Every structure is written in C-alpha cells, then in structure tokens.
Picture 1 (cartoon, helix red, strand yellow):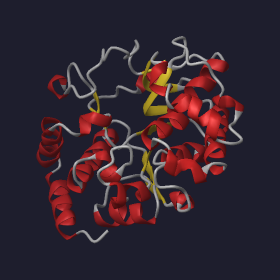
Picture 2 (tube, helix red, strand yellow):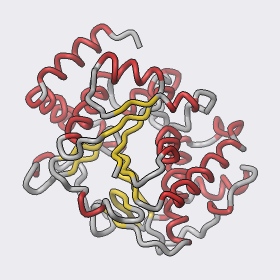
Picture 3 (cartoon, one colour):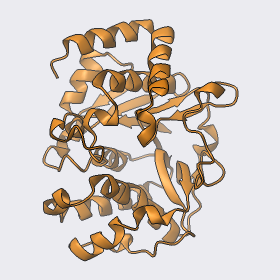
Length: 296
C-alpha cells in the first residue's frame, strides 16, 4: 500500500479570494502559520504509523516542504505542475490528479488529517475505502441540476437521482486496490472540467469541488454495486462522529480530521501548535523561522 499526500499551491496562494471560504486561500486555515503547523504535524503523525509516505506537489510545494521545511517524506514529486493552466477555484484537482497517478493500491490522506495509532489497518486490503459517509443527498441539490443544465459534455457517470440510498463519501482518507475504478473516476472528473473551464467563475466553487470529487465517486461506487469500507462504521448524517476529538487521544480517539469549519475554532488550532511544539520542537522552530522570513 502506497501512502500519499498532495499539495497544489495555486489555490493556496490565491489571495484574490482570501475572504471567500469557497476557495482555499491558506488551505482554508486562518493563517499560513497555522496551515504549515497543521501540515507538518499531519505528515509526522502519519509517518509514525505508516513510514512510507510520499508527497505529490508542484515546484512551489517542493520549495516549501522539501527545501525549506525539510519534511521527511519518502519521496517528492512535482507532477502537479501539470495543473498550472487549471482554474484556481478547482482546488480539489490536485488530489484527483494524484489519485490518477497511482498505479498500485494506495491511500491518500488530507493534510489536515492526524493519526494517533494504526487506525487505517482494517481498510488497506479493501477495493475502495474512505473516511466516512452519509446519506445526505441534499448537499448536492443546488449544484447537481445546475451542472446538467449549464455544462456541456457532462459524463454519464454524473447522472444520478439524489437518493438517500447512496453512500455519499467523505474523502479525508481515500484509496483502495481497485485502480481501474480510480482511473475511470478521475478521467471523468477531468473531462467535466476540461470541457467547462469557462464556466467555473459562475458557480459556487465549494460545492463544485465536492461534486466532482465526492459525489462522482459515490455515484460510481453505487452504480457498480461495490461495497465501500469506511473508517467509521455508520453514517455521519447527524454528526455522530467528533472528527476533532483531541480529548480522546490516544485511547479513545486515534484519528482527527479538521474538516471544513473545524479549521476555524481557536481551541483546535492551539492543540495542533502545542502538540507540534511539544513533540517536534525542531520542526516547530523551523516553521517559526520559515513564516517569519518566508518569501513564497
């Protein structure tokens, strides 16, 4: 199993949309410093349990994570340079391009995911696995009809009724052994965007990214009647799981994911910074120096 993270720098440095949460300026964090602390701690916490961790990024990402912060990834790749011509609002493309690069079973983890035990072990031999799922098709009720009405050459894999029977996937962790599925899935997602880049200024980019990354894969899995395995046993429709359960580490909680709005509360940011400073003081000093003097 190949463990991988990805960082596409274009959305991160999109200062023109710094006040619009639908974009990903500073990775959705309140400041660059907090983003870098979280990313470093994510990398180090994953490597503690799964040492063969790789980073797929672009030239700017190499400069930051390899040359400046000197993170201990097993390998670095700048293959996300291929996305330079894509719309900065399509911030999930860096992840999908990374999925498409994988030629053998893999596990992709977001840069705001933190591990405190070998919690992924039960997933790793499955055809498709994810962090969690719900049955809330209404989250796509705005974007789904708009795409089919206004976009051209929409792949048939996006055709679906928004039914509660579908398991709608959260991809904080995503991967599996079914490489053909991931190849087809990412090809269809890029086809949608390649044929409609001129329309991306006119839509809610937050919903759009969830649509081609999460809805598409969920629909393909459902249509193929595949069983998807998730880290959490049941649906998270009613917020059944606390993805920021720092208080339960490590006995009751071995997985933390600062999804969307969880990047904003001060107490969670303080946890990350304090843990990085306590457990990895050398990296903490390095990121302090980097942010004080950063030129990228």
